[in-house]
Image (cartoon, rainbow, N blue to C red):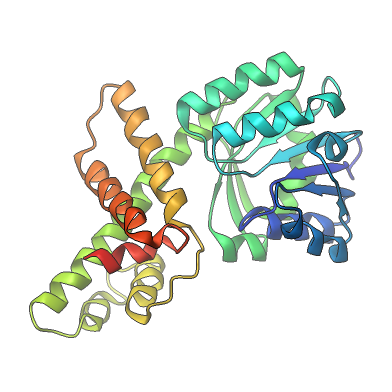
Length: 285
């Protein structure tokens, strides 16, 4: 392992593609793979080698980074990568997979002889483009230096939170907050409108005060502008909501507000907004 590890990035969607560009821009040798090859091919212009299969992408890689949709897609992809994996390779797993998913991937990592660093991220497409994600990293102490060149390329801050799996657990807590905030914004705007007022007045009223946050203005503004290009997709939000509720119930905790937010996001997905941003939940209020 050198300070320029060869990286294989599997999954070049909304998050993976900008992450790949920042890894390449940092001068790290990079191979990329995506199930839909057309989403990976533009990265060749950034200096990445576009692989035809996961096994081809990971062959000779020092770090394998997965940024896919869920635990099932990660498992399927790593099984396809199996012939190209070398024992001792670091697996930087950054997909949001929940507690049960993270535990299952830990078992798979042991089976494959990989060093697992469980490191989901906080941030959506724009922070990914800016290399400003916050990484919730967890894994063995000895792996930190091995992944640091990659994490430096994609993030503004890395927080190490414990053994592998701790990152995924903390990510659920963070996304529980996201879901409740997004639904809170949507409902406050809808209530303002239903009471005969311009809903922009709500955003103006809280602007700059203790009740405000950049995320409130960002998502609230998108809701009122009808701008729902996916940054954090509604499909993904619904998936994460299920993971949060399942983890809480397994821990003996009832999260009634988060469950209600999850249910509304699911209804918005079922109404046909799954490929839009989570802010599109507003359309169903």
